[in-house]
Amino acid sequence: MRRGPALPSALHDLALVRAPSGRGVYASRGDNFRDAVFARDALEVAEDVLQWDPDLCHEVILALARLQGTVDTPSGPLCSEEEPGRIHHESRERVIDGRVVSLDAQNIIDALA
Image (cartoon, rainbow, N blue to C red):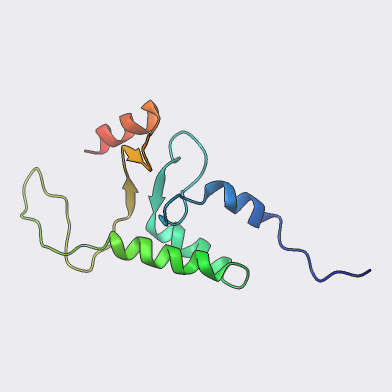
């Protein structure tokens, strides 16, 4: 029995970096980038797998829309650089779906703050 074309093996790997709760995809599974969503990278992944996983593309777009800026933050040392319409380059959280991220990830958040 002949089957249709096999899905690229990368789709299996993609499942390993898929973020929970509709957050899109993580940058990697490595310690420095686990639990981090990078907007441009997530969009590239979504475009690359659109024909095999259109739901992921939809999920990435919605995840990035939730990160989109809504206000202008005042300049100064505590400026977050948020602007209306601007989307984060990198998004990290300390707790994801009730799970505290690794100490390495928390240290990165502290260093970036």
